[in-house]
Image (cartoon, rainbow, N blue to C red; front, side, top):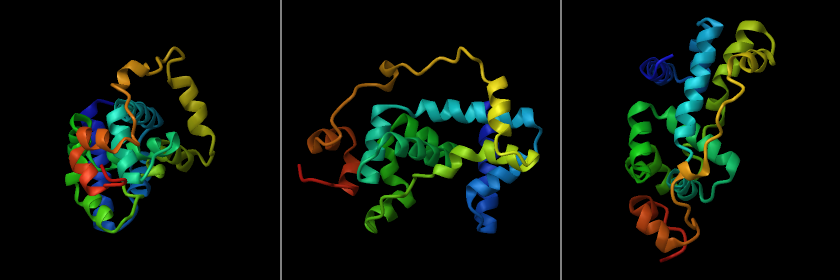
Amino acid sequence: MDIDRFWHLIESARSSAASTGKPLDEVLVSLLAGRPPQEILEYAARFDEVHDDLYRWDVWAAAYLIGGGCSDDSFIDFRAGVIALGREWYERTAAEPDSLAEHPAVVKAAQAHRDEVLFYEDMNYAANGAFERLTGDPDAFYEAWAGYRPADEQVRAEAEMGEDFDFDDAEEMHRRLPRLARLYPGPSV
């Protein structure tokens, strides 16, 4: 599945979710369940790729500010939440994580002191849910994935994460993510 097809699926699910009021992840599962198993696996591979591309310190710092902290597991959910925003916001975030300070949901959450915005765990499991819906077997995706995913898959090198820095250093956070740091000030600088 090429990147344009991947984002088309995400945007179709977003559009349908907006018009029906159903959760995005449920709509995405339904869309994927209507496709052949091979295409679901291709979607999962592309999801992992775009998800992994956000595995960087600067994106993690944005998640840390927005979430009032961010564990490893929470960062997985945050990156899925950024994907759920669609291609435009994903690309903006990948280019400049501080741009999330302009997203209406982030602004609204900051004003309401809600820290769960953009943390969307269920988006991580859409391919699994589609396989289960197709087969009735909760393990079907993992079995198919084991045969699909190359065994020699490379693990993302820490060097690719960019420069590590202290998320609890308010001055550093204000320097690196000034707009988000103003929305989510935390300790004073």
